Image 1 (cartoon, rainbow, N blue to C red):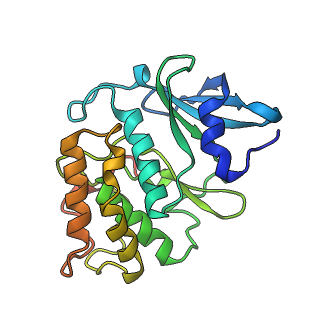
Image 2 (cartoon, helix red, strand yellow):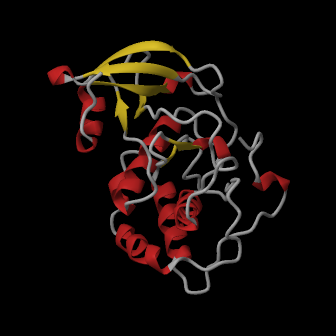
Length: 236
């Protein structure tokens, strides 16, 4: 299997033919493992999440989860962190429009709560990203370790809500200030969030900008869990 260079991953996903290989049955929404084949005999595996396979939720607008997946990826690219596999909107797909994300072959059983030997700086970035995206579902199993030890974070469908929704297993930094090294990236991205307008509602963009501005305040500290609801279930 010939893989595309990393700089071309999104283009490969966007222009490739999609062959569904099977349903990933442990997912809440319909999620498929797919093979994508592009020009020059390039091919790779991907995860396909069609809009019509999204389970209705009482608090998130119907049919928007796939767009939130793509918005999270694009924001991570603007910031330069954390590592999220390339993710695109695909209209021409077997079950209609949805998100198509590069598949990460993860080490079985290794995730945030098990086998976490990475420096705190990596998890600080993930934690800040979850605050500004208002991630309502950061499970430990959404932090994947590949064979080289690189950490990829996935499953960002429950993000960018206008109401406070933060639910995560990463509370290690509660009460600590923003790491100084992250400030320039957040300041820069403030002027670039309007580029997500095709994926998020205007109110969601305003709240995203407001959360980034709040994190940049000198008095800001990493939040602490307020109740049992603050940790997703199951945590993995």
